[in-house]
Image (cartoon, rainbow, N blue to C red; front, side, top):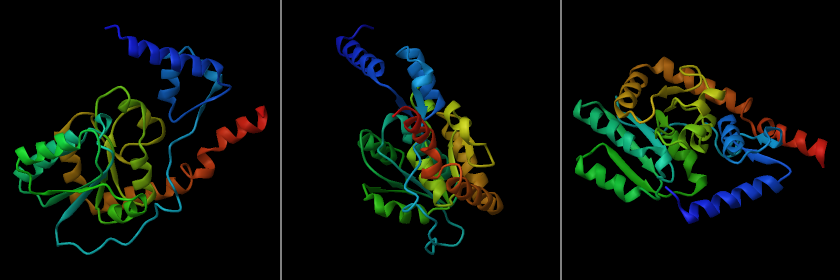
Amino acid sequence: SFSMRASFLWVTDFISCFIADAIVVDTNEHKKFFTKTFFVNPRKIIIVSVGCRSDLFIPLPQPKKEDGECIVEFHGGFSPLHGVAYIMEADKILQDRDEHVRFEIVGAGQLFTAITSMAEKSRLTNVEFFGMKPLQELPHSIARADICLGIFATTPKALRIIPNKVYECLSCGKPVITERSPAALEVLRDREDVCMVEPGNGADLAEKILELKRDATLRARLGERGRAISLSTFSPYTIVSPLVEWLTSNV
C-alpha cells in the first residue's frame, strides 16, 4: 500500500546512496538488498561485519550453579527481528517437559512488555528478566551461561543480518544457537561454528537446546571454535580490512 512517509524515506535513502562514494553494509545479503532496492552499483558497497569489542568480550570463568542445571542466555533490545517470542515458546516446551533449563534474559526495548506478558500468561517459572545492563557487564552475563542465543525471527531484515550478540557470545567462547539464514550461512557453518535452527520455530529451538545440554563435548567444541574464529575471521583488524583497502585506494 502507498505511504507518503515510506516514499519520502525511500527517496531520502536513494539520494544518500546516490551521492555516497562508498556504502558500508554488514553482510552480502544487505549488499544485495541495497543493489536491488536503491539501484546501487555493487562496486561501491563495502562489506564490514558487525563484530564486537574484542577487548571486552573475552572468555570468563563460569560461576558455580546447581548440578544438572543448564543456563541459556539472551541479551538484546527486544526488537521484532530478535524473535524473542520463539525463545519463550522453547522455554514453555522445556518447562512442560520438566527439563532443568533456565533462561536468563538481559535487555529491554520495543517488545519487552509483550514478551514479559507472554511469559506471565504461559506461567513460565524457569525464566528471569534482568532488564538493561551496561555493556561492560554483558561478558559476565554471558559467562554464566552454558548456551547463548542469537536471533530467530522470520522478518526480511532478520534474514539479512548477523547481530552483534552472536559475535559477542562467540568471542566469549560460548556455544551459540541462532537461526539458519542466508546472512548467517555466508560466514558460519552449522554444527561447526554455531548451532542453527529454522527461523520462527520455537520447537526446533527447544530441541537444539536439549541437544547441546546433553552433549558437553559438542558445547565445548562449538565454544572453542567460536573463540578461534573471533580471533581470526572476526577480529576488528580483519573485518575492517575491506574498508581500509578502499580508503587506501580512493582517498
